[in-house]
Figure 1 (cartoon, rainbow, N blue to C red):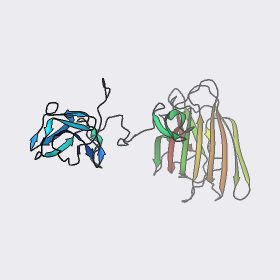
Figure 2 (tube, rainbow, N blue to C red):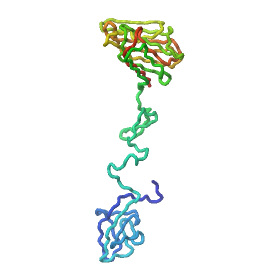
Figure 3 (cartoon, one colour):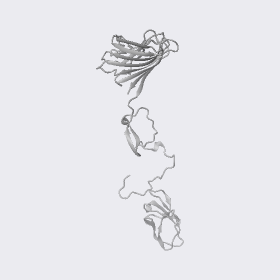
Figure 4 (cartoon, rainbow, N blue to C red):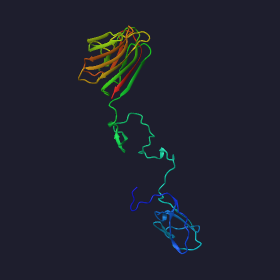
Length: 316
């Protein structure tokens, strides 16, 4: 707080050392613990003489550490006590654990409130730069990207398709889909997809092309490709339908909202095929349309999907 004139001395309440009266003397030195002390003013003191509180300014005055009574004291007078109040606006130092969060200003850094979502780019963090405390915007220290879960579909009984028909839009430029332990109801089925165009239904026209390769655990290779078909492909080899067989895949959708270029879809998969071999599956797909698409539908060549977890992520 600013002051006009001299800033008040801030101090704790103090009781001065005992003072012995000297006959015929009015001025006495104030000490605490043998050290001279200088009160802010006579109004910042309580002085008792012969059991009577003295009036500041008229009964005594203060100059530095010297207290002077209005008249000389005599033998038999007793200075009962001198208490220095210091700055009466000063609360002193609170005891440990006595200040609660409710008594703190909103700008105090207390850690009492949790942030429930990702910080905004302009939110600030404190860092120590070679011992100097500085603030920095979150935009300058956040990572280069993150995967934001948008939707999950879990299949535990037979369905003909699994589709994401919302959340694919211009919010994110790229998207990722993870398929975990997807199992066909019928043995030996390849897994495919179709895209939802602006008409709101899966496009089954001959707008898809793909090239897929794989390496099986029996050291044989496979490839599967098409230059114009009515569906895109996830697995090169047919997926086994035995109880413990399945496939898992990661699929990247690149700029589905774009309207300049054909659409790219990238697939990495691990497949247990119908012959009981595991296969490393790599597949590149193209949707030969420049229109934006807003969804994707998955299905086997024939029969239902009877197990699997499907997760859609936006990539930021």
